[in-house]
Length: 256
Ligand SMILES: C[S@@+](CC[C@H](N)C(=O)[O-])C[C@H]1O[C@@H](n2cnc3c(N)ncnc32)[C@H](O)[C@@H]1O
Image (cartoon, rainbow, N blue to C red; front, side, top):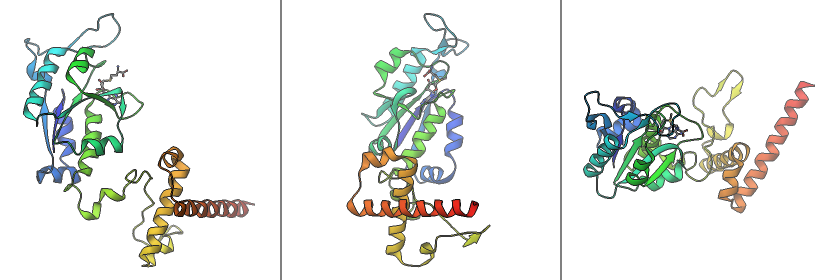
């Protein structure tokens, strides 16, 4: 997959992507990321890319022309029909479902804003969608671009080895991930759940599903509501609730 980022700070993104599984995916050619800097298309001696907002107020706004030229260069370089996405706090919420939808595309163009944002006419005319990574405001679209690229990269076949499969991660089945443990088997009085060391793969799978259901019910009940549950999953969740209530009672008793 090819991704282009239109940004005033390509180095911020390039350096962060050079590490770990995404860095290896890029070395293997599974993912290619290209950069288009609006400043390269500024026409004045100061390479100006921003200007004061009409109507007054604080901050500056990214001007249409240099940004538009950079974006059009990106569009001409990437496969035809590549989705053009402006990253903005007021966009559609970027989540695993949006990432899954985008990872089937051959190309994706991400536009990272700066200052107070981007001239609205550029967003309207030159992009197809707006994505937000959450309900908070960052100083620029570079961190959102990294979040989007990393999330999508993990879903492209060939990025993760089977040992790191994305299939079993949080949100892949509408549930949060189950807890993970590694050696030693006990530390500071905390033991690894016995079932994980039992070698009984069916029991381990059952326990993991139960933990994923329980965690989602505790931490993100709206996800469970949206996803629904099979009859078997309902039984597992009921067991989880009972066990949790018993554990809470035991803790209360020990405090008395
Ligand atoms: C300081 S912000 C502009 C904030 C804008 N005035 C607002 O109130 O929504 C500068 C740039 O950061 C990026 N940005 C900030 N928060 C973001 C978020 N939650 N998701 C995606 N992009 C974000 C956008 O590209 C934006 O143009």
